[in-house]
Length: 111
Ligand code: FES
Image (cartoon, rainbow, N blue to C red; front, side):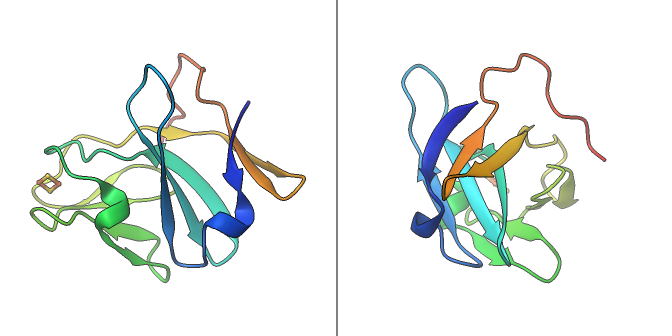
């Protein structure tokens, strides 16, 4: 598990973009106190999902470019034109920090 950021850096209903060496950026989401980590780049184009709108009630992030959407927990596309799932990562919260299994080769399957 890789430490990404303190939980306090991601407000409720917010997102923080994390840059790690030698890999695409990650997005840490806080949905009402539950943390999720996905790739930050939309699968439809070169947009940062952390710049999008987050709907905590539906658990969805809307892409800022073409308003496609994804379920944050599963990465499943939730609105056109997005059709390719977003990669999601196993998450642990400990010592007031968010950790993610960013080195796992297998993607977490959609629940
Ligand atoms: S780049 Fe995200 S919906 Fe087009």
